Amino acid sequence: MSELTIEDQYAAELKQSDIDHHTPTAGAMTNHILSNLLVEYVKLNQVKWYVKGANAFGLRSEYARLLALNTKNFADLAELLLDENQKPSSTTAELTKYSMLEENGAFKYNDANTLVAATIQDFDTENLFVDRAIKLAEKEERPALAAWLVGYRGGNNRNIRQLQAFLGNDARTGLDEEDDDDDED
Image 1 (cartoon, rainbow, N blue to C red):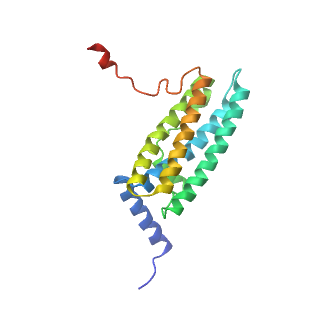
Image 2: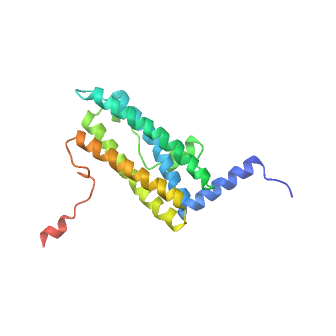
Image 3: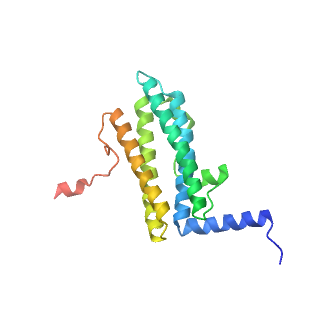
């Protein structure tokens, strides 16, 4: 019996990844988070590079902090996936395929408040995947993965609160859908 070629091994990995993304596993959902972190890295840099106005100096400093945290989270999460015997996406094509964050080259021309509000929305979008991955990790009895994801969720919540404060908002302003139908009875 011969061993699989490198190409055959990668083809099998891609096939399994496709299966896992259609019937989500903790590993597949966590790969979405990893993908979002890659796109978020680019978007955070875009804000840091192009923010203008009276608060630009302070925002550049805050975005440098967010970038350092993003880089650490990306590396730590990939290592954790490997610890869990999962395969983190390892090409730019794979990572961009599974990201749910969107980029736009024209975005950089927005005012500081719009740039910050978009970052808040991205963290909130990421949390949708984090919450799902936590549930899947718990269901699959992956306590280390679940614990890391819970901590990451808490970090995202803190980033949201701090960026919302810059805009003069409470932590969840504009993020939670309000059910106005209840008030009409």
